[in-house]
Image 1 (cartoon, rainbow, N blue to C red):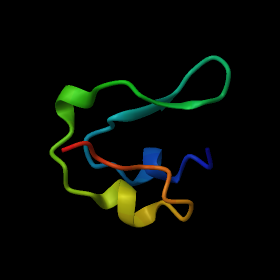
Image 2: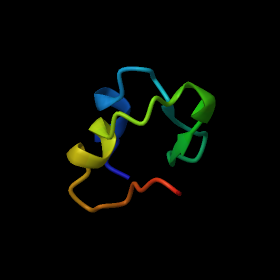
Image 3: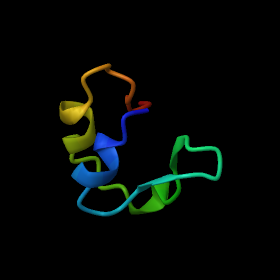
Image 4: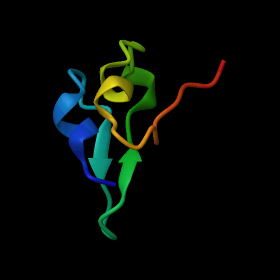
Length: 49
């Protein structure tokens, strides 16, 4: 929940909701570049097969 993925994503897939949680708001825009996964120090981001 650090928000690094928000700044890292080149397609602005992530956002912060009213409660301050990071959410995937535009999953259809994700190109699976994995930049967010590489940036995440807690390994909180993964992709389903």
